Image 1: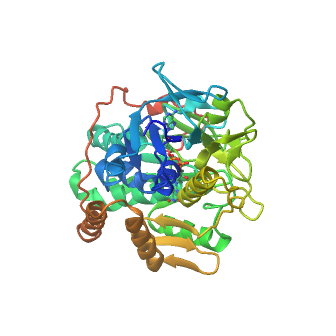
Image 2 (image 1 turned 135 degrees about the vertical axis):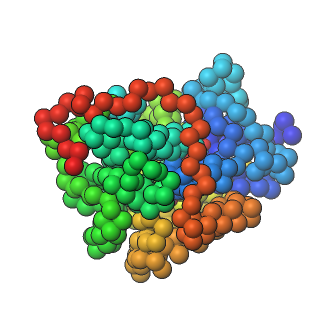
Length: 434
Ligand SMILES: Cc1cc2nc3c(=O)[nH]c(=O)nc-3n(C[C@H](O)[C@H](O)[C@H](O)COP(=O)(O)OP(=O)(O)OC[C@H]3O[C@@H](n4cnc5c(N)ncnc54)[C@H](O)[C@@H]3O)c2cc1C
């Protein structure tokens, strides 16, 4: 095995696993390095954050996924640099891994537009830890509200702010509205969870900007029907322990969630190459780093205008297509042939769900909304989950919640040492807790 061409894949997300899949039978040795031991189905992460699904329903140990591929070694480790001249991947613990071909598929994280100090007050959603921490914040806020006697503080505890009106923000807002306004109502005695305020703040003129204006308008109406307040056209100017500042007004809120910006992993810094303004590596048409045909960068970490001249979007199908393209290129080069034609992204559509009864879908040639779109969204997501057991488990969880309204994942699993928020401490010019 050791004399075989060695492909190192950093990142076992959608892109990285697609490379491994595409290299099956290629006669290469593969090492997958990831800082986590699991592959995560991020599109359903918000459902863990809102107590719909359990963590094990949307994540799978990488080692287990590739157990039948004897040519693949899986390493748990944090990559901190690349020695491009020496062809080595550098790990945080001082170890290094040599490669013949390297694929960087390290994804992206949320970004705070230069205000990283907001992160502790407005966490984003990217990892399982983020999702369970968000679930804890939401449930703890309701628990504290149940014991709070001061009306101002209780209102702050029952206010949930989501910053960013893209698909993740819309999905979080709809799910929190259903959780508080419908599902948890019978569980509390002192508070009426239907009075919870769910506020979705979008700086742009409409939510779901990647959809057509009519689908955006439909999604807004559907959210409002669930009891979500949608505030458009005003950016958040501060996040702190008391809530957010938006349009010069302070909104007192115990739970503020961030779904507004994205920043690529620091692969460009590791490689000392040019990045775009979201930190993504500008790759050549074959997805390689300029001047380094042995290093591919794919998925959310790569920047390439391969969608009819437009940038490839940061979504799972794009990462998968790039992973498969990189694998094809590696195989052709090993056969001594020139690589396949330049990477071209094929877009199959945009999907977003609004609660558990409505969704919007834009396939380009057809647009669907409402319950039919929700069913298509649900079936598509079940189809893309890994393994029959998870497909059945998720379908059953959804069916259960749909018919009974009972969410089995309402668990506070980590102790929170934060002091309860003090609504009166908001940097308020005018306090808006109505
Ligand atoms: C909340 C949320 C909802 C989403 N919803 C959708 C959706 O509905 N539809 C859709 O198509 N897309 C959706 N996306 C986007 C989609 O998940 C990404 O585009 C896709 O995951 C990108 O794949 P990737 O392989 O580039 O990165 P990822 O899948 O993010 O994988 C990156 C991997 O690299 C690892 N890694 C990162 N840094 C290091 C390091 N230094 N060392 C070692 N390992 C490292 C990570 O642990 C991770 O496993 C969503 C994303 C989020 C966050």
